[in-house]
Length: 432
Image (cartoon, rainbow, N blue to C red; front, top):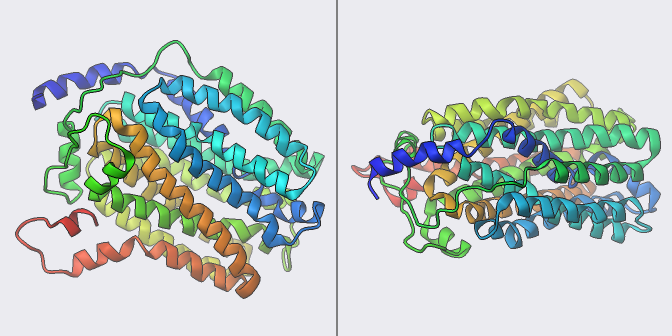
């Protein structure tokens, strides 16, 4: 297929994304992913309710993130074979009994199982991200994915805020009862009458995306697999850029989770002594990420992917300075949380813009699986490690851990920048 053919095919794909569908998809993404985060501001209360150690209560968050990673690995790839809108709806319906189990859990292990189920079925959010990426044309893919990712970000943000308020009024179990209602609402709202285009032939990267990749610092033509259904392992082995972005996603979400998981413990103790409501309201600092999602997508659509990713990665490292200094200062904690969230959303948008431009639309569910599985495995690792570090080294240890994770994606970029430039782009630079 020639480039001119690919170009004329783009309007057909763009036309399939109706006005209003992005808003519904963003809402459903937010509802799906929120199930993982309801527990974060409630961890002190949950630990008290089950007479458990606080580090044990943190396993509820870890279980949700691991369940989400399992859903990405086992369920999201089905979107390349099934209609993604129907698959997402089925997952949202399946999350309802998991939320009911969480609301009635008699013991902490049962709550962990329910949280894992909420994570597993909450992977509907990434099915919808892949659907959006495949239905939006090249000229607006960054903005479309950024909009849906903004809904996902809002779900994480509001999960913390709303769960704190609801728990303060009616107890932590009411949070999961309300979640069951939201899952039903999202499942009913998703359109079921039509699906995305099902062109199974491998197609070249669109010309617009070729220019975006070049201006992002990748002069070589991106490789397109010849297999019509490449497995996830083959995608990772054959696409060094995808592998590098998976590593970046792992590290940035580990840093993010390393901060947020023990934050409830910090705020519930001296000098703050916050209850569930106040801890939940602190989550409003994440609104910066919601506001950034679309602007970051526009920056990437204009070909500034590489500098944007470097800048936002650096911002995440810098964020841990006010976080560490804010051990007893709420203003500094808020500033650090805003900077950390801005950095995370910017890197996330840049990463996804590149990986979706790298391969044709019929592989997007598997590309999503590869990237987001690494992303949430990193989040689970960051949550688990930060709970242990909090118990052993306190808040300073948590901030050092988070900054170390955030700095990892910068290492290959700094090394590539310091290395003398060859006449051609090398494989190591291409993956940086």
